Image (tube, rainbow, N blue to C red; front, side, top):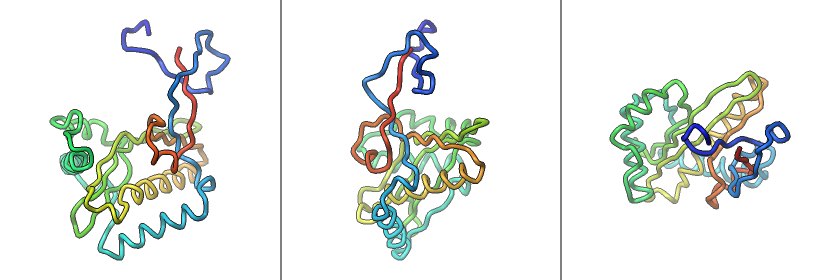
Length: 194
């Protein structure tokens, strides 16, 4: 890109409008509509949520927590999940605070301890709602409760309900289509470079 920032990526919506339009090798993982998820899949997600709640789990909105609390939970759970420190961990509270009005979603707790969090940001355009699931953290010792899956279910279902109530389409991105779990939640969507 001439700006020196790097290549510019655009969606297929711009096809035919830009002369230097080239497909990328990678694609994006965009959340499926609730209707695209099988009845069995949706049943299993509701069941996992119910089992978690029966074991003392709760799902609480991110709006209940300060930016510092969210950063602390995220960095701790990220470290537990991946075994290394989250990028920019020292400044995570500041970044979350600066983007606070865009942050949506929930945090999963078990016995009052956070076990899953996702950094999910939302912006609204005149015709659509755009959501970016940036990253998350999960306590691997709670895998039996599938807290990451429960949280993805809660966050995506809430986003679809909100967008539909507004009469807008939803673009809920899980980022690059580079992980197997994204295949369960998303459709791969091509992206292009100019």
